[in-house]
Image (cartoon, rainbow, N blue to C red; front, top):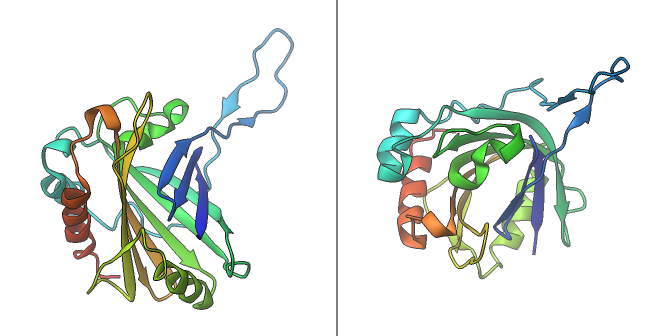
Amino acid sequence: MIKKILISAGIIVAIAGVTLAVLYFIKQAQPAPAKTSSAKTLVLDHSKDYGACTLLGATLIKSTLGDTANKLQPSTNTGITKDKYFGSGVSNVVSDSQACIYAFVPGGNAGNGFNATNAFMITRTVFTNTGGPVALIAQMKQNTTLTSIDSLGDAAFYSADATAQGPGATHTFNLQVFTGTKETSYTINQPTASATFTADTAKTALTALAQTVKS
């Protein structure tokens, strides 16, 4: 099974396995003067913009996701990150990604991963050549845990994990759409204890959102 690890703003997303964990990568600032605590700064790479935060408008997201998005927060651009792929046949797959987080609750910051575990997320991945998407699509078609979605891009796959239980458990629903040398991932994350989406309702909502994106 292919697993893509996207490290961005302290968020590690394992796509295709459909698990999400939050870690925090903090860069230590230059040594501070004596008797002064050293500062810690979250470093984001905004050298490029793949449009993850402009693909969909907040009004459309709120109307499509319904009551869950009543308190939808402004988008958080987590910047550009290098992707790492694990699994057979992906050694030559090279890409980087930009993630955009629309939290369902206020109070997001670097310390809590911008509330990514209770949010709608868009991740735009750009590959260096067409060989990357071709290799991934071929393997994903053989993955029985994924559902192929017709009429979206060159290929599209949906996955759902609504079985996680226990403290801190999260339900995750993910739709990946491949078009040319780009892949766009639409994800709903919700704490298990307060989850409102099911595998079917999330699939309907994410597909509706993806259908409005032209490229």
